[in-house]
Length: 256
Image (cartoon, rainbow, N blue to C red; front, side, top):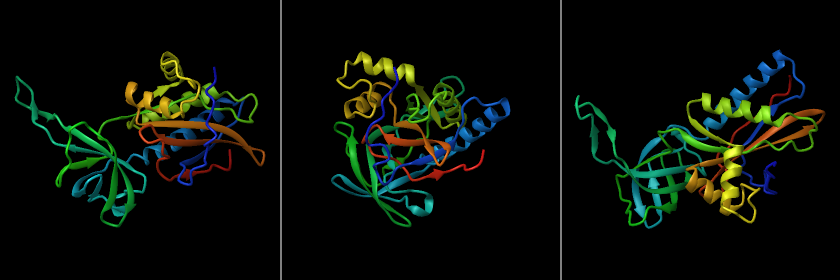
């Protein structure tokens, strides 16, 4: 079963538009080129989730100010976890410091980005959690789980979308930033939930399932298309929490 793409494809002006020139029936040397292209695209996607960490400087109900601005790489639409540092965890034998049990408080989305700070609104929060001045914010220090359904062949006949999807999944994992959940598990999970539109991962209910059951933070959609006798792969990265398109990035490889 092939995953059907939503009509929202690139409808959002803030879409992540990543283009990768691909071809079918490739020779080994060309396959290596496609893999290098997949690596480049994966790095662009990783740029949507930079390793940023900051502090809450002001709280007004569901609106917050954080000390992350454009100078540090923050962008409008970026989603951050608000958390509080917990108690230390030490090795019982060596006494070595292993980390902290951080307490997650909320997820916020940046709605206005200045040079040195940004304004954010809460999109979800833990039950009973209260955010306050001095709490910490971050994109994620851990690997980010992303759902990657099978790429839609679009109007490109004979394209080996299974191979292209696999190359992209491998490239994403190689960045060290992502845990990739691929088509079989996505399809099985949505089918087990008996959703009315189980074939459409962009359905709001399906997105909620991906977020809760797989702990996926983002959904990556891919589609092939012909443009002036060239074949392109377009990718869109969506937040599973808000269904919003994340980030702004693009790359087009005109020669093959």
